[in-house]
Length: 128
Image 1 (cartoon, rainbow, N blue to C red):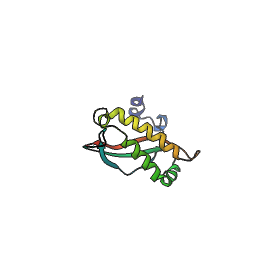
Image 2 (image 1 turned 90 degrees about the horizontal axis):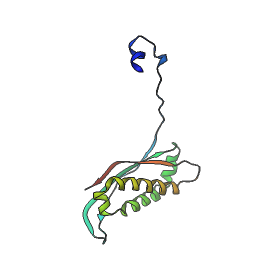
Image 3 (image 1 turned 90 degrees about the vertical axis):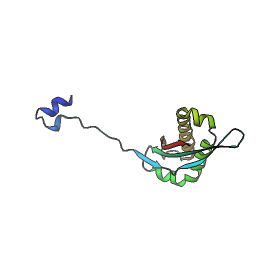
Image 4 (image 1 turned 120 degrees about the vertical axis):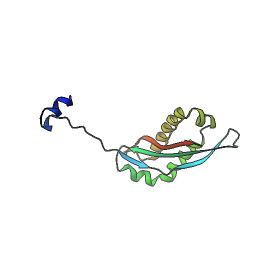
C-alpha cells in the first residue's frame, strides 16, 4: 500500500497518518527482598522487582502519590507471598498472576471516578 504512494511522486496527502494514544505511566521504586522457603527460612536468593503503572489518565498520578505507602505495602505483601518454586521455575505465569493481583489491589485503593491502573509493567523482575 505504501509502495505506490511513496515512489511515484504523490503528495503525502494520500497517506494515512498513524494515531498514537498518549500513555500515562507512573514508575515506582524497586522492591528488593530475600525469598523465603515454606518454613520461613531464607532460601539464599533475592527478588528484585521494579514496576510501573499504565494509568487511564494523567490525573491519576496524584491519587497514586497520595496512597503510595499503602500501594507499596500491598505490592510488597503480594510479592512476599510468592513461593520459592513459583519464582524459580514458573516465573512467567507467576509474573502474570502478580500483575493481575497488583492491578486489583491498587485499584481498590483509588477513589472511584479518578481512573484506574490498566496494566503493570516490570522493567526488572530478577530472581538471583
